[in-house]
Length: 168
Length: 259
Ligand SMILES: [Zn+2]
Image (cartoon, rainbow over all chains, first blue to last red):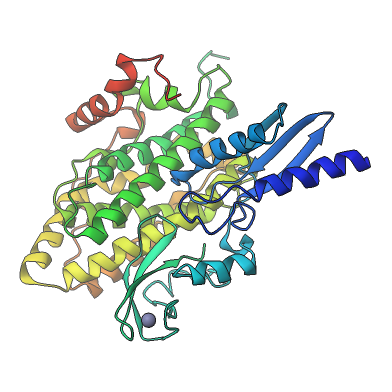
């Protein structure tokens, strides 16, 4: 790969850093693990993005925002492609992203565990600490929150509802 | 060789359409709860589940179009086929009923899907496998959600118990079709991309029975009369109605675009 290509690729990643998740404005799409790759062929730029949840209504918006960002930065020959070959997981979120999530008031996902015995563990609920007061006295209210990726919890210590970004 | 020999390609197409049709029709049904959920949390949960299911169908249809190789896309399969061309289970097209009915149906469907996808997640075809693994993660949430509610309603008040029991009694005659198989399944299993549903039938039944028992519900009779035929295009009158709602806009303005 030529130095020029490397330079352009780095620049594209910098631009992508400016595209934030429409549902979680404190995170950009790299931190979210949505932007998966950049490839440069000649002067053609291809950006690969992976959907988080199948029904995620933000994907169209994200694709559009990436395109707009590239246009804004003067990139004219580009393509944004959806990459379905890998399965998005919250493990792709950076540690920095998880801290930002917590500061934003959303309990971040912990590391995923293998779910070989999913049916045996199906009735267990896991403990999610409150992102506001760090109390462990919390309870699950609904598996689904304002978006498919979040569950709703209530903190019995500070009496505040909060959302938990589910591990997937 | 006759012209309608079922090739591997045709079997794959049919297989994908069966999976996708189930999810599109059930997703559309579940979406009817949006704005009508019994409590806000459930309104959100059901709307999210509906979105997941429609998302799954869209990915499966898009891949079906690729396998078919006739220049169609996902929208074609969803909007431009008639009822007899849909191969979804009748279980998926039944009206949403009360909350108990929606939950009972979803519990049966998502637990079946869980077992089925656990086999399909090792499919040979890379793109298909990728899709299945993604969808499986979400199915687990759907199953957890519906199972929790079966327990809460069954072991809840007198009224909730009665309603969820009625729901299971009512939906029972549609469950046998989950295990319908024909030459499409045979070819898919032989090519390493199909799930042998009968291999987990007993495990699934036991899981369902255990859950119903824990919910203090009576297990309906597995040997009662069961309907059949939907994998070959036989449907209840409910499918036509749901398709009119689903397809009307697109068919009236076939060239319409969001942009
Ligand atoms: Zn708290």
